[in-house]
Length: 292
Image (cartoon, rainbow, N blue to C red; front, side, top):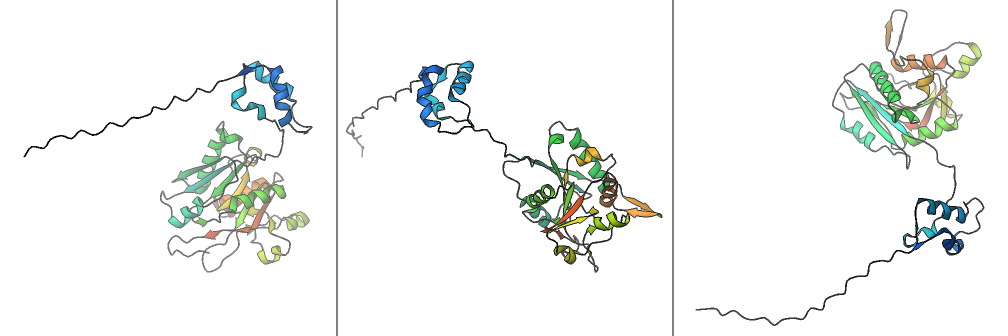
């Protein structure tokens, strides 16, 4: 059996006409003033449209097809720099998933620069010093406003950075930390020393503060020392206090963790610290999984 090919009827296809190329109209500054004036309104702080037109003409012919006839220049000064470098030291190259989840959930201020740096394997004080020296020496990062310290056993709330920025600016503090407690059977708040006691007596002490008593005066608790599991520092602080900044001291005459050693040096320069009691930070036991 032989199959004969069938001829299909031809269909007439109507070709579309090619789209017209948009025509670009070139005009001068003098001819666009009357076109743009209705869009300008009565705002007194605007740059006169004649001046805008002159500036456009300086750069080349004015292209009327691009919508520049609707441009308005509104001067403003409400932008506030909240650029932040986040630094995280750790002796272990691996991080607990709950800690990483809390870091990834951290909300950043809108339209602000933010970078995250790690230092793995160093002693914690040495790690902080290395990272901060590198940041200050960097032509870009050194110009940013804040440094946020996080640590590998802390669970931070999503609004931590935004709250800490609010408090550091409202109270004109040099550094502000979140609130968390020591691990183990006895849980002490990691918020150390009373600046008012220091002012009255001259005694500089780093005893854990009474959080319940401080809450009666609001959510901000001025202190002599803060921990570093979730703390915000002004970048300028590390230019005003000489390095080394974070030194761990274990001597018969006295011992200091690196965070309180730095606070002691900064207090001698007249710097101020506080804890924001709204920023509740978990302290994770990496062995048992318990959060304090």
